[in-house]
Image 1 (cartoon, rainbow, N blue to C red):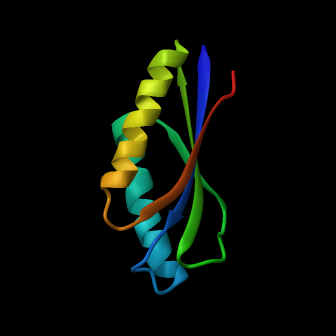
Image 2: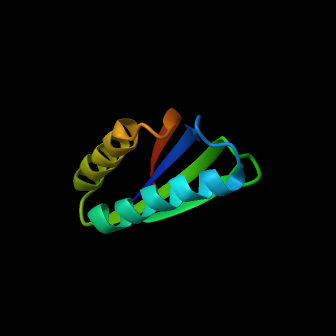
Image 3: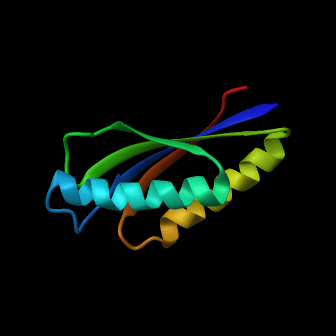
Length: 94
């Protein structure tokens, strides 16, 4: 069993309030959960309305398959025009 962690630093340019930010993040996280069966959480910058640091966690039987899913999730974020990925980090937790 492998547990993968993807940390993403994001900038949400069109957000003008925390409410705008929550709307964008909620939409993205719901789509991610449905499409990839992952856990998503905002772990930093909760009080900043244009920044977010998200943790995406997934479990798979093999690390190679988890890496493939992480790559697809990163592409998913990069395709979404509502936010810009400033930095990403991948870790194998188990």
